[in-house]
Image (cartoon, rainbow over all chains, first blue to last red; front, side, top):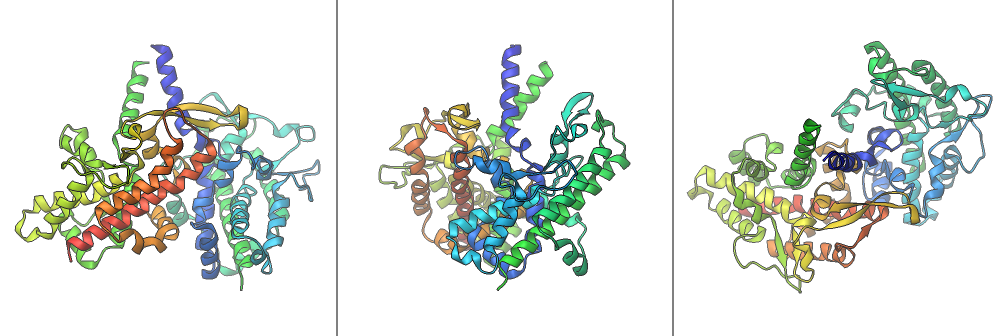
Length: 264
Length: 263
């Protein structure tokens, strides 16, 4: 009987497992893509819908769904970017996401997308939607264990071991049970025009550098062995301030990139 | 331990009893309402009340309480070898929908309860007949029965892991995992972007034509889906398009039925 119950429990867990292993969590990616779509110019929105045949939000986790599928496994490395011993983003490395954000962006800019097949434009958009989101997630900068052993530890949840990466990946959704992405967007702080321009400045590398700096701050917010179920309201609030700001920036920047690409 | 078992059993019970995950039903109804004529919208509100989004899965809920048990048979469509609808009796979605449209057309001579029941049929059975798991093809006898197939749980090549999954359960709930934080309104937006341009095409024709249309959509599935099949992660992700196509068709066709019934 115990074995049967355990089996049943495993089946139930497996049914929901796909969602849990996604980077930024499915929720985080969806809110970023959904918010970005609200910031698109009408031309960019029309072009995105034309190539994607869907909203941006629908494609938000496509790279996670396909990362273990043959033919796409190379892109598994594009979800994050290396940071060196001096806390600086590593540039020009094809096995990193920031490299491909910039590559795709440059290839598509100035009408470049018009020289591509529709399916290539689609897949490039799918990559940008996901990677720009990922590169604002504090655990999607790749620290070297050799150079920064201090960044490799676990947290706890109700006394049980909880992976540091797992916690921060899902941190937008933490303590927000039942929230939908459009509800999150309603509550998202919207920036004035002048601030949007400032946020959208830079490129995949500078944004990743900023995330690396945020990532170091996150280690201070949840040091080794922090039991996240015992965090105070203020401590939880501090975590939300960081991740909400990152999600907001990712959304404005994704929209900025797409608006720039599809500018007539 | 006993408590855990009961909780799991209840959770599984809920999942096997519903049409699609409720959010897709709600999205279909919201999009349908948006696509209706003002007359049809007004009739729907008159008989079901202002809160339209709540008017989903009413038969499902009743069946859970042991009521309206006959409605379980009304959800399906059967198609012959030429993908023509088989309507031998009234225990199918087609006969029940045709009857429901007639009742709404004659609403002046019917009681409020009768009309409300007919509108519920239009909503729920149109949704049900667009669920892959409710479309039976005589060419593939196993389509009528629920069967287990192997669904990929990750990995690729030789390392891909599979687990058994019930076919009908998969077509009801197998896709919500991709969009768990979506509201019905978000799905409505997406359905319009994906399928809005096919609106007229979906709404044209009769209920029997729609059954044939679903047969065409579903038939390629049974070429590879049988009790021995293994569904890869890629196929799972790709099949979402077919699932969504069913939701969009259901939405626009609820509107078509309500429009024609209230013209």
